[in-house]
Image: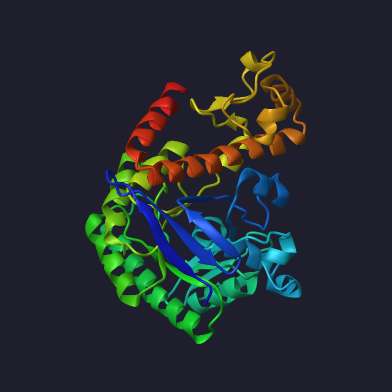
Length: 373
């Protein structure tokens, strides 16, 4: 098994730490942000663009790739890496959240998720064992257990039931993973809603099963930001210190910096790519909307402190023109900038931790972000 995780530096003032993940397709320096490539493509950019932005690892989604192009197609290429011409690590989510949110007539049972495809209405069943086998066929370096997602708010009874089912599924995922040894690595997913007692219970049950890595699921599902942060701050220290900790589906640049300070190692979020397509660009002093009329004659780059391809070559005025004209090029240029911003931020975070100045770095960064709104 080509997987290892070791911690290389720890902040003396916070729980922030740097580390290195060894996977079959290369090493990943943490804390790390993973661009979202749900369908085997990070929207609007090429693998070369991703590498140029500094991406170390990307995320794909089991539910979507299972339905289209399908495992039979991926088998022809030996997995997703060759299919999409990305030769660095890939993590895949198990698809539980997408089944919950997208599939028609989805139903959860002890066996797994039964659902109708959002594409053509065809009927499917994905069991915990299926989720492991599908991700192995995708060729993911890091795979996730199938879990039951719940919405916010949810009753304590519903939260407890989802937690219990997630733990039973986690045990089945671990057994299926051990039956067919491969080079990928399996993460368990913590549930429990926003209730500390249930979060602790979920973590205790997953630790007993024993996974190489752990993820906090069920965050950023509609709860207030402060509650999300409180839940993460409570949960992260309960996870094994020697194993990677992944926060799923979060968040803004300031969110990431704060969560690193709580001890998180890995992140993914559609925000940099989705917001790029909607005209919102992240900068060192906060986000800006390139559609704003004040940028019509602005000759400066998006961010004078940014070294990305877009900022080196194009003005705010030109991007404003492209966006107003709905020229396709603007989606690529905006996305390159936003991804470069997120990935460069993580590089700066790692350096600040290594130099044991993370607290001052985080304080200054979050203050600058507030000043830009």
